[in-house]
Image 1 (cartoon, rainbow, N blue to C red):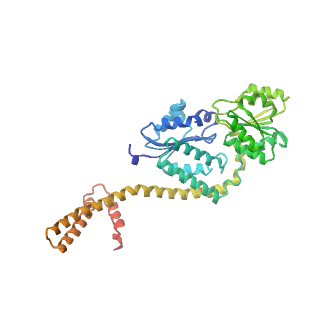
Image 2: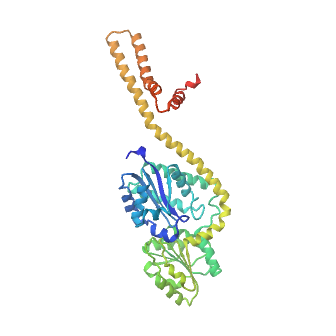
Image 3: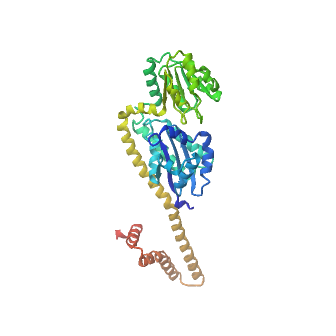
Length: 421
């Protein structure tokens, strides 16, 4: 498969096209990404790939000859039929992939319009692909441009200035349930980027009683120390759950880390004092059945997304400005790609010219060595070079039978400035 036959492709799903129940089944966890990329690149039609998987989206960006193999691979990976998967997938080809990547990096395709976390998540996805050799020159060029566009959008617009983050939405829900949050005890289960952002927001809001738990205790300790909080291993969460009023969970576990029975025991020990459970993980960390318990308020990432969207009007104007920037940068990117495509042709053209000159020059030098007059030799040399350059274009114009004579004529006029005479 030649590079010329390949194009940018992207397939994926997000919070708009795929419900949470299905997103958690289709998500590709961090622990799976490396093997997934390697198996994806085993296809002869795919030369480069990047996998982006977050709580709100899973997307595969590839430089390939078709997207059917990507969809087929994805379906096999998760045990779905291609028809089932296609019902929730969006598919982009060519320049639409570029525009989509620009929008994703800039936070314009996020549940929280203008949020910045996706920028870091996309960078990590690109870095991981690069580390195992799945990132090639084409996708590198695409994502370098995407990051540049995202930075420019944030500098030139207020698209993220009024965004209501998931952390802010969590605080809003907490205030509805508990009123003042100054004395609530909060537990963060998981020590990844999402929980770090939420925890820092809680502290900035004035919430001080914070604890952290994680499967790797050192990571829980590192996060807790930045918050002046407590920490303990994930295995202790079920036993200590009763002490906390708000629990935010976001781990990479493929199965729930908090079950209904453990939550039920905690509620009994709390004498039915309410507990707010916020599950930001995909796949989910908290068994959905826990929402059936009295005095338990369980919110998923999609539930918070509805709260976030209440503040959308404040950001619509900035978003329109950002979309204009993306369209402008898309035109620039296409121009860069076109220039790169022309470089090999220009090199071949120059090489052919140099070869013609070299052959005719050797003939001319040979003629001079035989004693022919230099003036005559130079005249023959110039005519020979001129004829060789004009021969093939002239024959192409005279013999063309494909209806392209007009375009060939216009190309010659433009290339050699003939219409200026």
